[in-house]
Image (cartoon, rainbow, N blue to C red):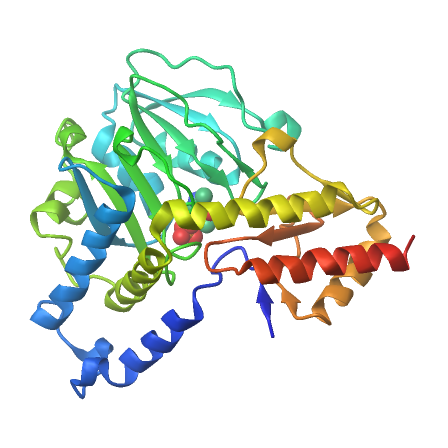
Length: 355
Ligand SMILES: *Cc1c(COP(=O)(O)O)cnc(C)c1O
């Protein structure tokens, strides 16, 4: 048995893989693969419609919020968001909470002015800044709700009268939020929703159409909305698998139900870190991520032996990102509580051997 703690691409439900594998061979007894049918056929249209509807339902979206499945990863949105929302003379406010925020800031600067309103860079991004002010005239405020590499997460979403834009790549569908309070949400699929190659974009259509620049057709959200997220050939397989994951999530009871389990998983792992004399968490406790738990060993010489020890128990994907070191265990929706228990047991056992 493998316990998959990979940060991304990452674990998806086993039944999703089984259904996806079957759909590659013979989709719904059509004698055709899902990969060899036209995207404008009624067969695929149903997949797209269901995927978009499930997002609306699971996120409880109102009529103003449109759901799009677009090509590219979250990194494409670093560019596409400012292209659609920020004129050259405008200012966007950014919170700098990690590598992904920093990259989003760099791209936004190509389109307008950027004011970085807070940063935890000086501490290697071990916390979420709390006190900062956003200029009234900022076109939007950008946050990265979960910092995949450093293991911090905004526990409460900052209140602002400005349009709120969020990169939710690594915590989308993991907890309930008032999603309608966001102007735009984007997420690469490969952390918590599906395979790499597709972005989920949820956008309040009222914020679009305000910039003066000419936007290339394929980059303009309004064109995708008009065409029902089928402006050109969409990434059909990634959308199909995402739809299966969303169906699975609904069957689990939806976002609130999975959040409860996610909280249990995170609580169990952080407790195991805190009570173990060999390990230390790398972030401040109040900002700890429910999705990516980062920790180091007090004696770095024990890190390699611990990695081998866990590998023997089927645990994979816990080596930390090079910018943090140590370990990172990702606890996405599809990871069962049982896998977390295998890891926490391994930590205890290893500590007994090295006491
Ligand atoms: C993984 C990740 C990205 C980058 O996604 P790509 O699909 O590789 O472009 C951006 N933001 C966050 C928060 C991520 O976790």
